[in-house]
Amino acid sequence: MRTIWEILWDYDPNALVVVDEKFKIRIVNPAFRKLFKFHEDEQIVGKHLSEIFEDVKVFEKVRDENTVIKNQRMYFPKYDLNVNVVIFPIPEAKMIAAILIDMTSEIEREKKSLELKMKAAEQVQAVVDKQMQIAQEIASILGETVAETKAQLIKLRDLITRE
Image (cartoon, rainbow, N blue to C red; front, top):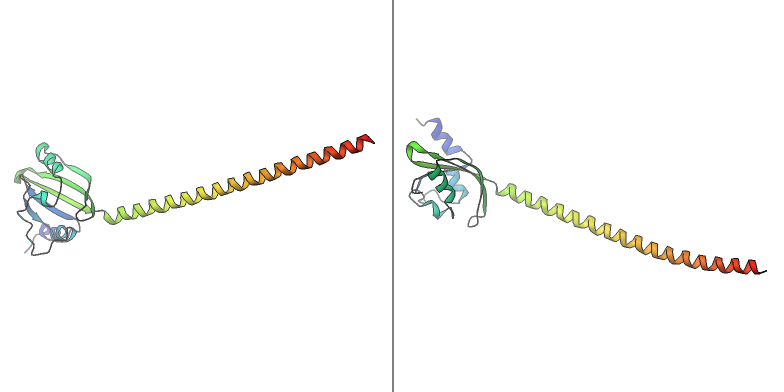
């Protein structure tokens, strides 16, 4: 019978990977395979982590300093993936484990939301600019009209006062 941990390993929606001290992949869960689009029969165990992770420096830090890294954002251009990663050592086994949480759709939503906000701000600025232009045109016309009216009234006054 399978243990609860084995069941959790299989059903965890987050990608899980465990590597040894030399960064050879020792085990991955089904979510890891799915996230990185590896087929079930494709051999991952035994590969060096750098074949998937372009930069393993953060794993080196965990190994060398026996520390936990939380909420490390990583981008995998080859897979167009954005993930948050938690990486922690397993000293008794001389291994390092990582939990990868796919943030790609959330980041895309944030980008689209930001784009919409920027577009709305541009439209608001365009309306403000247009209103300022119209106000300046109205002021210019009013200024001309006031000047013309003043000139005509002065002429009329002068005409009246001469008589």
